[in-house]
Image (cartoon, rainbow, N blue to C red; front, side, top):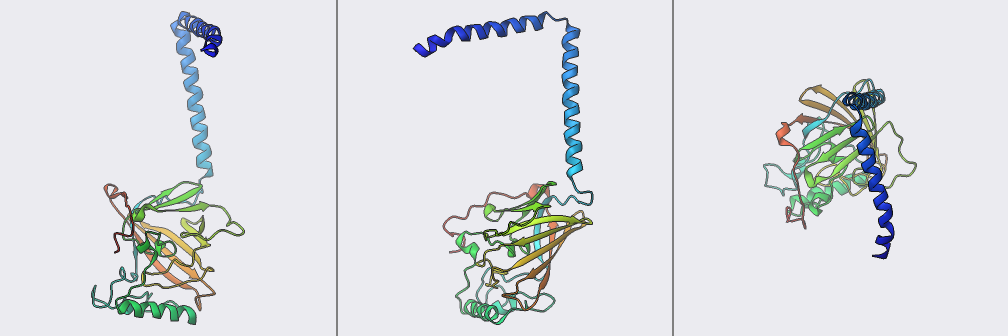
Length: 280
């Protein structure tokens, strides 16, 4: 209370100053008040115009607006969600990844591990990919296939992909370099740039417990993913995906994913994965 009493005279003087200022303003002619308001509005408008021009100057001249909500469809769809043999109309082996009829060119250790996982799935013991543990499916699978819609948000500095599936997100930093030694993560470290209307995304530092399909197609920590995404028409994006992994692949592997635009009313929704209850 004593502190409040000591501050009371200052508060009184401040209040008197405010009242005096208001009295002076109210005594001004209406034309003076109008002129001041117009000057302020003109200054605000000029500042907004300058900011818009600066933002436009930052945007690459060859960029294309890809923003929207999509479903991702891999042209050679990856294995179904770990269905044992006899379910889903196909065996695990026939559902394994193929592009134009060819399986990924795996090195012996990766091929053996993949064969073991396929055999276990066909015996009714499916490989438990990360989604069954309420973890992100991560890259590169996230760039190839999604059960639920994704939303692409785009600015000059960053492209953001929001996944309805477990409400995860992926960040692509535009016109940046990879860190010297990035920490591995589910979605890796991704940087992007525009090349003649095509969005080129370069991703490294992907955790090696992510897989290329739901049957357990493996990769090493050296996996390098390059995506080239272009707009085919107003409702379709085409993403050419190149995967390089000298420790798991005999040679690079190319695939194509199609992004089909969804109605605005079908935006991404809340998705909660709790104690793997969707997979038990």
